[in-house]
Length: 227
Image (cartoon, rainbow, N blue to C red; front, side, top):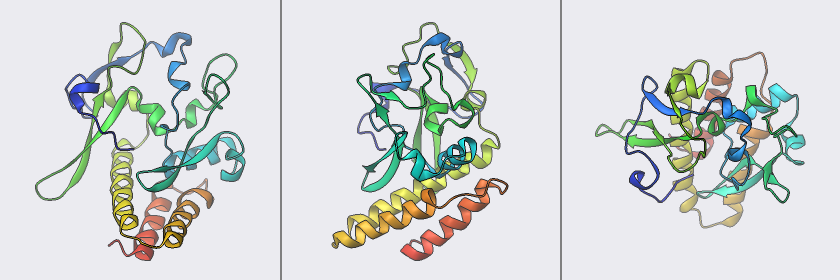
């Protein structure tokens, strides 16, 4: 999701790598669940999130769509996000005790919070990202310093970061492709194709997610002529 704000407005003005220390530690939240409510449709799910949720909970995409996730248009592309429900607009995975019931399978955006990603393009056209600290999001006082790599809490972080960058770049290319489509039916069909390919079609639990994603990404690029 693109944000039309400057880093100076929302961050401490620094960009971080996985090896940097950042003041994001909040003592295991200590009973606070502020970031699990009122988030609108901002907790967008990527294909790895869907792999984790379906494999980790044993639920299908269709089952999750019943009350835990929903679809919204993000920069021209239809993508799923965690659904906020009830008067308090609370995540459906939050327990009565105010704790995340899917913590081991929580989405990447939840793992990041209150960090965000800042995407960059080098002079050679290479695209990458660094992390930034959102200073107005988490209400926890007296945050401690923690290494970004530890905070993100994701195995195979190098491969994960490569996946995140590849997915982000792909979505940008899809957005550009959809922007020139004059036929609404074609736009709808492309979105449906991507939803089925990356989210609805089940992933194999005993096969590396990244290899499955790379195969599907190559297929999508070929079908949409994005190479």
